[in-house]
Image (cartoon, rainbow, N blue to C red; front, top):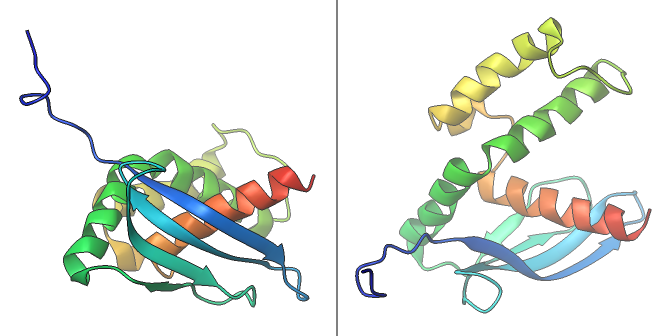
Amino acid sequence: MTTASNQKTKETYKVCKLKMRLSRDGWVSYNCEIRKGGSRGKTVAYVDQDGGGGSEFIYGYDGKEALQEIKDWIWDNCRLMFLQYETQCYLLTNNLQSVDNNDPKLLDYLKPKRKAWINKEEEQVTCDDLVGWWATLIAEEKYYSNHS
């Protein structure tokens, strides 16, 4: 028999209170909260993106440890999201509409990126900031799914 006291809970993070708009330059501008434990959890950081195609501003977190916790969660839970993102980058770079997931050129392109993700080599991963990349991807997916 297991009880609540001896069960290990898996932490999760969620993007909440997402406010978005399309900037004059065609970029999705947004701000949001990152909450620990789900949509009713404690707000642990805020992310603001001005829609100019630049980096995100991450603020309101309780020290480097709190930010590192979010990054560790992203490393552990978002590998598939990252590989899908990199596949989209591959399509854009090569001016393609689609690609087979078993295409040898795609697999060669993804191999070092997958390895960098598994080894948590942030400087080798193409995102400027892991938390900003994750929040931006969620914001853009939500924006375009509502406006398509």
